[in-house]
Length: 367
Image 1 (tube, rainbow, N blue to C red):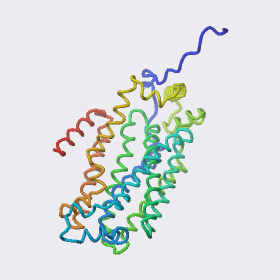
Image 2: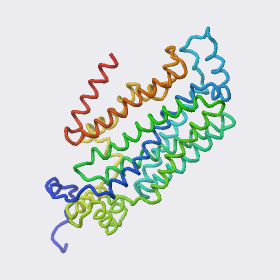
Image 3: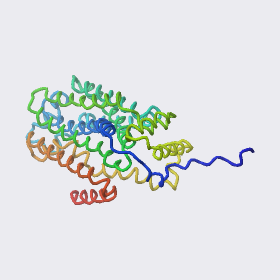
Image 4: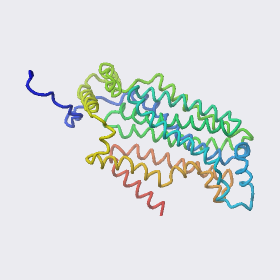
């Protein structure tokens, strides 16, 4: 055979070359990351708003009259007042839809780009928020929740990836955590809105649910005007456009080292046959276990349930309506503060110390 041997296999990212990365934090990349991170506020807002709404009497009286009667029955055990399958369907339908949508969003994000997924998520969330705010029966309410779940599934798939790919390597941890910060700000904002709308009878709950469309509109606008990431453009066969975007977001033309790493990583990824099957191979098992169980254990601590049902939980413990919503606001404020501390520390101390510190705090609080 002419040519003397086979072509070398793609090598992926070079550790030595990573030291040659140039560029700075440009206003352009900060703006794009801030706008894209709004996607996190959608998830956070819905976590915070739903628990507050389900503690409002006008909402329960209209859609869950059985729960409303039990809630106002003084002889009823506090822990049994919210035991209702319809109410469980209202809360859980969003997460089930989000699970299915995140699986569907993965090929869309890869083959159509991150912006496409951000757009799909934003439009779906706008439709869901509109249905919820105007709901006249339980069917409309559940359909709206399902659409919200689809929006969250697409947004949570694309936004963190977008932030990681746009951020400079030395600040990737902090900028990627903008998504988490937006999520916690969304929770805190929802708690404050619930505290205000609880006093508006009988349609305050509609305002709470309808305001979810505001961050969704920002996310949709982001999908229209934000640039695609260099990684996505290279991955989809547009290296020239990818290079142009990379030069723009880094504020310099000296991006050859980082660009070459992106090209090599894309070639390596495309050279792998049956990637999903390879995940389960023995050599990849440690990464698979960490990727699956670390997030799962974090959720199984119950923090999402606490955030979601905070007003209901506080009411079950004997707090009044206003006091339970106020306590939820305090919980949300602590969440925002701890996220800010993490953003400041993550690129200085590293991921592992923060993970250990967070784990120790959770163990102490659980005990």
